[in-house]
Length: 265
Ligand SMILES: [Zn+2]
Ligand SMILES: [Zn+2]
Image 1 (tube, rainbow, N blue to C red):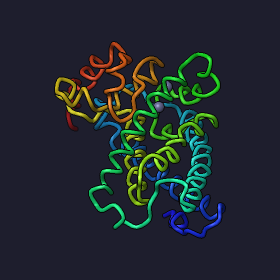
Image 2 (image 1 turned 45 degrees about the horizontal axis):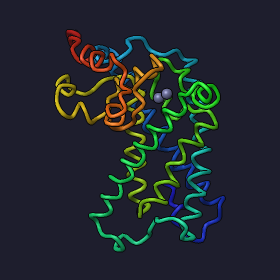
Image 3 (image 1 turned 45 degrees about the vertical axis):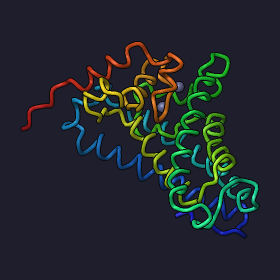
């Protein structure tokens, strides 16, 4: 998957092909799996954990998939450019695992996650300014009740902004392409979980210290529903530091996670 990206003498077109395969496969496998589990197989069994009990319409899913496919191409162009630049030595990406050892291999993934979290939070807040919202971010919010297919449902300008994470991480962090691939798996997993619409965390999370640090699907679904507050991605500390959590966020989480399980049969 995406092996073309590892060829130091590849053309831009080779890198585009490698990126489309990697980005597209990731999106369709993860969003498709979440959709099969949450919207087909376990729709009834998990109903008590559906943050917004109703399900989106087929027309919503079609729009989300269509715009996500468009984003896959935008991400692929930016990804291909990033790899092209990296093979020429213009970024900090490195190719030999032994150059930095295994501790840094995993350390670089953690660094990428924190950089992406901060980048996303501030770009997201900027996109919500009335002046930019309409042109950049409104399309993502057409999904008031998102499905996993909404994970990459971005307008063209928003897809370009979201894709900035590739060059930013490669410029700031010495990172191996395999570490970058693992970071991308974390990214799609979290993104899909945030849009699938189910809260899977236990109820005690919100009243423990983890609830202060970790973000939850309830946080992002509430962001889609209310279009206010909750700008974070992987963690909740930016929203807490900046006082931008929705005032009803914690109560909503407790409500969703307190619903009784349906009786079997
Ligand atoms: Zn938003
Ligand atoms: Zn979203």
